[in-house]
Image (cartoon, rainbow, N blue to C red; front, side, top):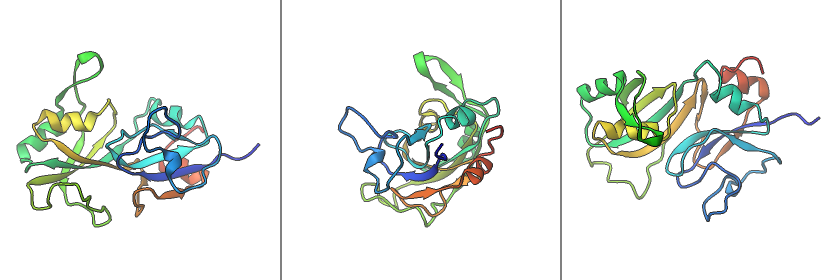
Length: 199
């Protein structure tokens, strides 16, 4: 039996986390990389989000990573419109009410969040607001993943999300990958960095 393979990619903005779609959208198969048959995304990033996405031929990974009893840390670099105050930062740290599926109100669990600078490895985008327009870069680490949670959280405190980049899951990081680039990871290293046991 052929060994499973594991990949980390920087999913670009305006690309869905799928290889096949009935819609006219940018797909993972458009990346310039010879993925083996049976490769699929572990979890997903929405079309307007970018950054770390895991791909593998091992169908067990999604269950082991996102459906396990032990939550896994996910860290996002987020650019929001306007200057965020320390008071607002504290509100986000302690949890804010957001709407989830069915319109139900849900209070987010406490998270780690800090104001940061945009890393030099993250390229500017030509269609973004000018760099001198008021904005704040945040580093947010969650252990839960409700639908569009980060966007809803910053929206709940009156800051519009302008850019959302997943930079790590546990100890698996983007590193110096640029949009569209792919890095293959050995199996043992893949599971160790993601802190997955019992595989």
